[in-house]
Image 1 (cartoon, protein in one colour):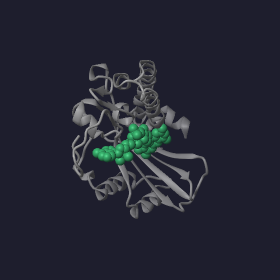
Image 2 (cartoon, helix red, strand yellow):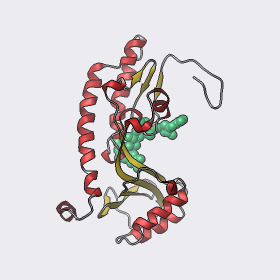
Image 3 (cartoon, rainbow, N blue to C red):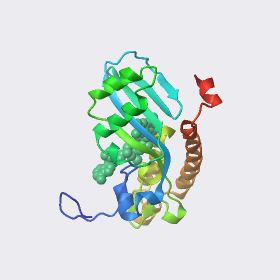
Image 4 (cartoon, rainbow, N blue to C red):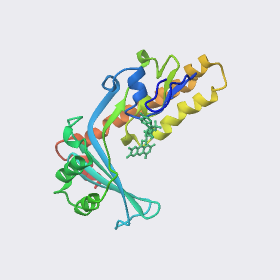
Length: 232
Ligand SMILES: Cc1cc2nc3c(=O)[nH]c(=O)nc-3n(C[C@H](O)[C@H](O)[C@H](O)COP(=O)(O)OP(=O)(O)OC[C@H]3O[C@@H](n4cnc5c(N)ncnc54)[C@H](O)[C@@H]3O)c2cc1C
């Protein structure tokens, strides 16, 4: 392997656990757009200290047509905010910088009710904004089931179900366990991973993908649906 900083090295096994925008996947399996299914939603998240009101152990959401903002209390008097909004365009040059990202959030949520004015106020001083598209990674049998030669992918790099699933961490851990369990076995077995665990994680993934492609659809609708009234 070659590195940007450091000399070339040889490894028996390389595991790409580098997330949704995996560089290992791109280098070994092919370009991201071959595997990425953009769910036509964008997401932004940031944290602040001392925000009020504060509701312990409650995820508070405010939903409008095509967008939603949520807050939840974290340790140490910190609060995290999560914006989710429909956006047909997967990539936009305007949102390559934090300034452009904040401007887009102001444009989308500036006229919104609830605590949105206060939340956008808190956003002004934020220097660490997470901003990304909501996507799934779908690699199927013909792509070698996340392994090629001595390279394996794991977690979001291999099978991101999207952050909206709320189970990406757990899904990343099952194949990781399989990899660790087989680690002392001959390399060929390690690389193939345990077929049982792989089968069951693929079943779980299929269900999860289906479910989590479906519910974001409600956020992409252009008008209120019956469910949004029921939830409110
Ligand atoms: C806002 C948000 C909320 C979420 N909420 C939940 C939740 O409630 N429950 C849940 O289960 N999941 C949640 N998820 C999803 C969860 O975070 C992911 O599914 C999980 O982190 C995937 O783990 P991973 O190790 O595969 O990838 P990641 O956690 O993305 O880790 C990849 C790592 O690789 C590093 N990396 C990437 N490229 C390079 C490179 N070229 N060189 C060196 N390092 C690199 C990154 O810096 C990062 O540390 C959420 C995600 C987000 C964004």
